[in-house]
Image (cartoon, rainbow, N blue to C red; front, side):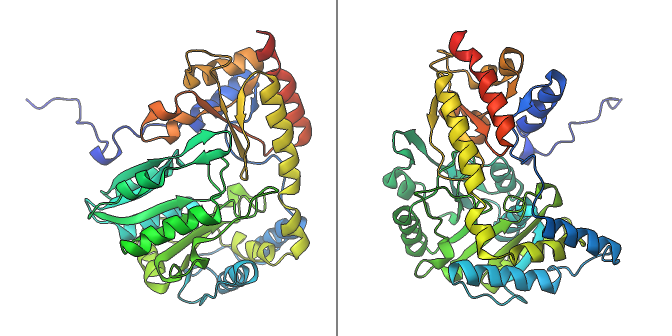
Length: 395
């Protein structure tokens, strides 16, 4: 007789991809009343103009399915944003696609461009959806390690070249980078661009933190480099820039064949989303220069305060050049270097939640001793977290 127990329904493609660590750590924060510096979302609302535009859109009846590629006013605003900040010229009709956040744009790109057995060069650590998206496409990730040091995170150029094989189709690049806070330099971007041109590769760039770059660093979009406009799909979103992470309004831009491939897969994921939030995001992208010039300044201040507190607590903190995040080496306060255990104990020990970096690595051992803290909270919240973390130094 057949067994009454059904077979495991989970596809082999997603074997090993369980509940995300963010869910575990956020639940731990709720249960213990700890300050959640694990998940990367701000605790303040975005510009009033943007919020009011969403309310107006809801009240005025913009609540049904938007057009598949996104409403025209947002696609035009995205194209104008790329022209305004980077000198990139786009056709809003064929080279701009609105998505359910950057995560869907990434999924659409990977599912739309990769065949079974294709290989993807990707820097690790990496945002956790990257490996899952590559796996769903039946492709293979070829990670290149970013190593922390006194001068920040760097990669070995020889290792990058060695990661490319005849099966490589795509390079997946995140800058500014989560979880390390690294902003790839112009020279590093040029190395990657030369490699892509030499091997006829597509480059998909995740640039959601493009406006959250700190003093001393500059964001260089891959699509601006010579020879890269036609082979780069640029992904971004408004969630990080406008403190609207829950709206999930993202976009993909680039040459028409790349956008079309992404749209072909995306239409079978959410199809469309966020109708009243799309015109509001267009308002945000049209805010004056002073908004964008100042969007990172407050975050830079909380970055500095958090880093000082982490170092005072005895941890080795690697200075973030952008994004919401600062990474630390826990070994000075936990000699066995077990970052997962450190994070699970931290809420009870100090009343703070962080995320173990090993979940961002293809080879978890590379990040076993590293932990990520988020600085995208109000100054008084960061100050309280720093005060609590000081208990580590006297433990």
